[in-house]
Amino acid sequence: MTDVVCDVCGRNMVVKYGPHGKFLACPGFPECRNTKPYLEKNRRQMSEMRQRDCAEKDQEGQKVLRL
Image (cartoon, rainbow, N blue to C red; front, side):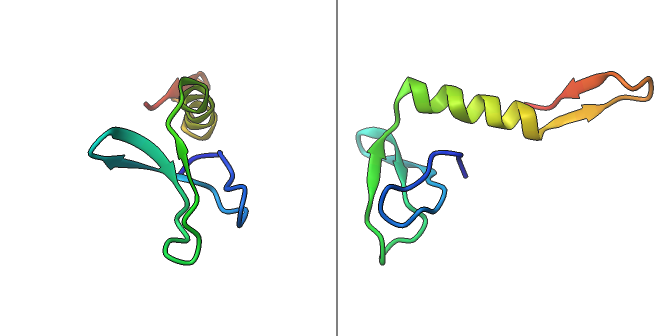
């Protein structure tokens, strides 16, 4: 799941793999058939979200990132 929002229904889009490579698709399929190209900009947004959500603290209280 990504933080890129579907323009049609407002759900968070997911990364899918097709014959022409990666793309973003609405998880509401088949009710919502919205798709978007998988752009570098979207990938950076997802990476920032993943780092923010995966931050943990080690025994000394320092942040550790799981990627």
